[in-house]
Image 1 (tube, one colour):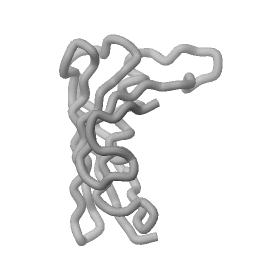
Image 2 (cartoon, one colour; image 1 turned 30 degrees about the vertical axis):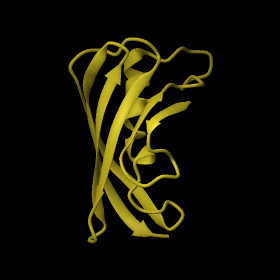
Image 3 (cartoon, one colour; image 1 turned 180 degrees about the horizontal axis):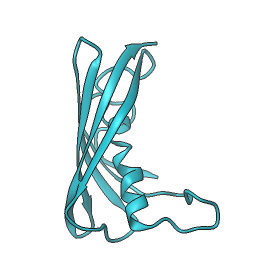
Length: 115
């Protein structure tokens, strides 16, 4: 579940959104705090596209997450910006927050191609 503060799935450019898992990653099990923040971190590119998703593919080839502390609560805020190069490479930079403040950063390496 996403709640956008800025940007959106259909808007190009940076975006800020609160996100939570609506369903468990494993049926019948509650996700751990680390699982929640990693799922959110993997969504940075998805909320801050710089090219039309209908015409381009964005393959996330690597995800790096650095946390200063464990997240509190089920909602994680992502403040994401994606950068693309004409060579077909790109990256997404995402600041991560919980209800108490900043908890870390995520970066995604991208391979970009036309569909």
